Amino acid sequence: MSGRLHRHHAVYSPVKRLSRITLTVLLYATAWSAGAQQILQQRIAGTNWTKVRGANYIPSYASNTYEIWRNYDHDVFDRELGLVSAVGYNSVRLWLNAAAFDELGRKMVDHVEDALRLCAKHKVRAVINLFDACGVHPRKDARWITTSEAYDTLLQSPRLTSDQKNLMKHLFANYAHGFGARTLVPLAADSPMTVLLFQSWQSTPGSDHLGPGSYPKLERYIENVMGRLQGNPAVLLWDVMNEPEFAGEGPISPGVFMTADMEQTRDTFLKHFHDFIKRKYPEEITSVGWAQLDNASKYADLADVLTFHIYAEPERLKSTIDRAVEVSRKAGKRILITETLANWDFGSPDFPGLASDEKQLAHYRKVLPVLINSPVGWIAWGMIINRTFDPYTDIFYPNGQPRPAAIYLEKTLKEAAR
Image 1 (cartoon, one colour):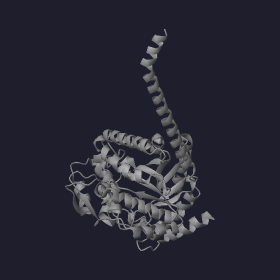
Image 2 (cartoon, helix red, strand yellow):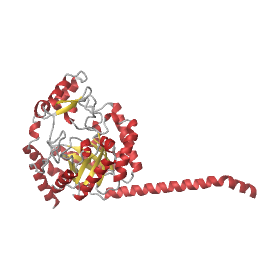
Image 3 (cartoon, helix red, strand yellow):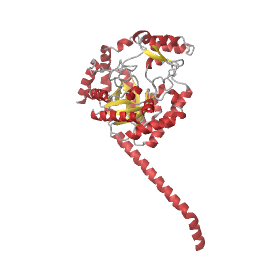
Image 4 (tube, one colour):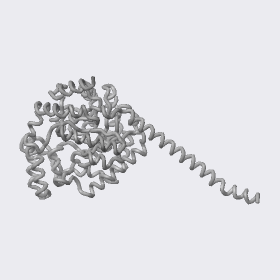
């Protein structure tokens, strides 16, 4: 009996030892995961999300997010982040670009790190966009022509249905044959109608790079950026993708922004990179910058803090914020508006007028009090006039001179802070 017991012990003891090792590893992994989750929740709790006040920041020299980092200018960032702080904001939203990383590698991360040091210097924290669905990915056969010429070309294109052409007329006719007629856009054989709006603005990584074949390359981009900047106190949160609703470069009809196949590709992309980031950097706060509150609610599992965008007159703005509070309560997560306040509409017959100092100031006078008294924090669209498709909603000239809305904003924010 004792011999049999001895032999059984000899046979099974390696398994037992292996089991103990496995159990130890599992317990350690579980403890580490719980510890990372605790740190994440402490970070979230350590920010007063209702008091976030900020601006989406595109430096004055850039026409798109690629140029921000390809042509990075420390002195411009320093000067213009100083304006952000001086006006009373405590946050900015910074836009990264995967193509700039492809070209510059770690040098781009150096630039981003320097920008975060400047954020700290000026006492603002940053929401960092990793990917952006808005814009039009570059086409090799694109040629630069005026918006009016591009509009007329698209209007004659057999690729577009009559419904699509009517939608294009509603959105872009006034701009293409008026205020923006001589603006240059890159038109290719398969360009979507949104090229009339976005001009040089490029999606990143682009609708043609959202499939699994692009994942390894984009993972290296994430690892280089977040691997270097994880734990940086100047980072408020990481926005995995800006406005995924536009990932198909739509709209493709009045009520449809992308095909069902592209929507599935986008959703798989978001799920993959959410899981990748949570596995690699579990202590970092993430979000998805949805254009619509309903999507922020629908995809709440993909975010630690829910974020959405709202441009509206006071009544609809108030009702949307009320809904956002309820969405936040049901999801058990904080919520933040990461685009709001700007006043322009391509479909308006008075589009050029909306860009005037007078109309901008009148809009701020109506909308800003609603935001300041809101129980939801917010980051406005428009800060420094730049070379992008949308310099009209910005409130400072590149030389630092404020428009009337900037003066009103500074006064109102500082009064509210007392």
